[in-house]
Length: 168
Image (cartoon, rainbow, N blue to C red):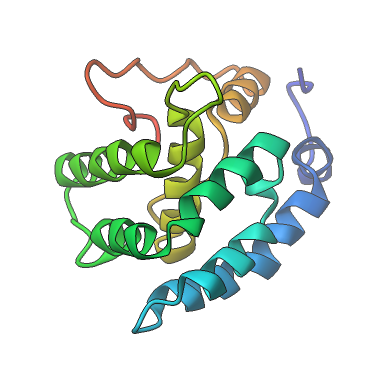
């Protein structure tokens, strides 16, 4: 854990300057691809692959399976982002709808189980790029560790949703 009195430099070292730099460099590019009409899945996926949030081996394999279904992934992503709701309730509903579609399209394991975390990670990348004031792309495990470092309590567990900790 960090000492009670810590500097911004201590926090930056803990969080990692390189990871932050990656987000600052890549998210504006991802955002630009998401705002283009017509939406180009190949430009989006190329930009997204540069983001460290999708840097894990299984993350990239499942992301590739998802975006390789071009027409379906375009439809699912557009359904997520177009006229994105203002209310938390409606945002959670929209995100859950994306997750349910995404796990069927490519976010699944070789054992034929759904990779909810991978689908949520992709939703968080997309929504963080478009709405950085509302969303963040950190993995749940990262948030737990960060909360622990600052002695924050964990957020309450959701009842019937996959996205309660993701929506601010």
